[in-house]
Length: 234
Image (tube, rainbow, N blue to C red; front, side, top):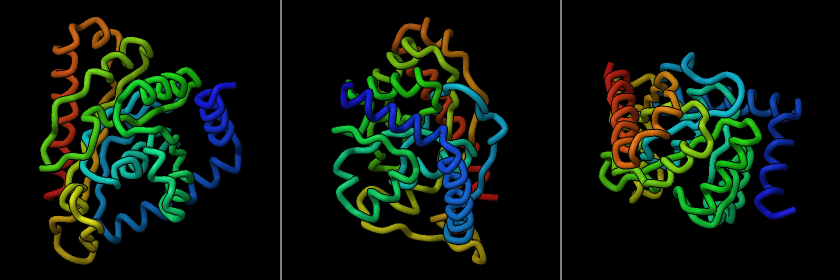
C-alpha cells in the first residue's frame, strides 16, 4: 500500500465510523459557538451543500481559519489538505487532525495535492480546495492555479463555490495571532462571514478551455465572497 493510499484509507475509516461522526458534531458545535462569540460569525447557503457523495468545494483563501470556516458553513464532514509542517506544532497539529486534515508536503494545488484530492473524491468524500494556492497577502483574490481545472476534468463531481469575508481582517497572513470581533460589540474588522453557492456542473467546466474555466470559476467564488461581505456588514 502506498503512503497516499494509506492516508486516504485512514481518512475514510475515520469519517465512516460512528465515533468520528459524534466527535465531528460535538467539535463543530463547540467551534461554531466559539466563532460566533469571538468573531460574530455569520453563515449562509448551507442548504446548497451536496449532502451525499463527493463534492469539490472551492473557496477563496484569506487565513488559517478558512478550512474550519468552510466546514462550519457546509455542516458536513469535509477533507482538506494541510502542509506536513503544520502538524509539527502539538496543539495545532492535534486540532487540524481532528478536522480530518490530510498532510501533504506543500500547500496548494500541486501534483501531490491533486493526487490526494482525486483519491479522496474517488472515495466519495467532499474535499475543500483553495485554488489560489496560498493565503492572500492583500485581502483580494489572486488568479486561480491551473491544477483545479485538471481536478475538475478528472473527477467530474459537483463543484460548490464558497466565499469567505472578514477572515483576512481577523487574521492576515503577516500577523501571528487573530483579532476577534466579539458578538456583544458592534460589527468590527474581525467579523467573519461565509457564503456557500449552488453546486456547479462539473461537466460544463471540464469541457471549457482552461483559461475560460478558471476565469468563470474565479467569478463564481468572487460572487460568493461579495455575498459574504454583504452579510458581514449587516
